[in-house]
Image 1: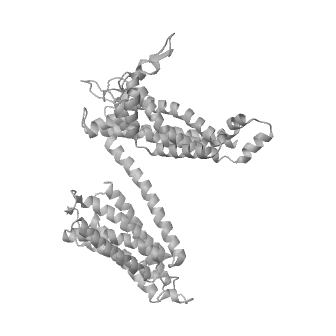
Image 2: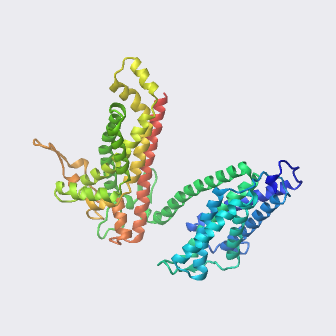
Image 3: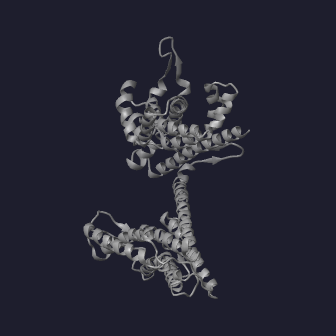
Length: 517
């Protein structure tokens, strides 16, 4: 066994070993990417390559990768190549394969024999125990290649032989759900590709600590890439669905002569092209009101808790409370607004109530991120300012807050991204006619009076629509407009949220540059 020999002359075929390992990793990366594009319908399962369907191509790739992994592990174990494999695979890897064995054993038992949930769990536990103990005591070159290779070969045979094809359906008896091949095959392919890439990366570094590190880095990198890919594919999916409706009736003339009715009109009976302009305005005003309410209060609270308050039980309780409030579901904030704010605003939904509820939702994150940003400012800044005879408030205003501002802006960006898409609070405290013809005129509705409260604004006390509420009305409730209208609304909501992110990122860059001047 390779791990038992301190040194061994490298065999002439070591280049072949490396090429096989790199080929396995490359194959896994390709199947990983194709799995994501297939899952999001960017690649059709009916696509044919060299006479093979996409699923059969997946199967052929896994057959080659599985055979290569098993061959590489055996070749290392019998001493055909010089490697640095350990004597045992280890308990950590064994437990990981035990988890895989639990899921695989339970699913295979249910699919092949129609066993219920209890039986599949028991079989899964037995397989998990065997896999954990078996892999843990195997030599590393066998323990990290043989299980993954067998899984790849099994999945490859199922796909190539046509046991799992485009029309395959799984209807488990234990749950009321149906699983179709266009969803199941890409998901299994993605998960198995990660395992194959991990094992191939270990083989490429000839096992040992360097191989384990290389495998972990590759798996983490592919996971990160997968998350980014999911976000991009989701955006592309929404764009593909919503862009036709967004551009319906649009006219693009020379210069700035551009007309997009979907963005500039409301919903009027008999109108050729209806739009969502009132909902856009309502969303923007809700976010602006929430930010105006939350930022001064949040930053002020953070300054007091960090710079003035004695660090002890009081600040610990406040920190726990703010973390809990940030984790509170949005529907709870909506219920609070419905029970406490709406009765005080004439028992009717209003923009002002929505602004306050969203502001309360944003406030905990502003406090948390502002405190962390202020804490991160080095004490040397404060000491240098005090040495110049500057008092504490002037130090906070002129030194601490400018240095902490990039972190504060980051927190606001995250919070705005959450509240701009919230539906439940708006549904409870703001919603009115979901498809209004006119946008709320906030700036034109201010009135100054001689009696308290001296300023009145009827538009703030009126119900309003918003993009998330309008989207809910179309797609979930099926009210008022066709489905395409909903996808167009979803695209515009995505653009609005990304626009707020862009404003926040630009502000953060500005404060960083100003800080470095």
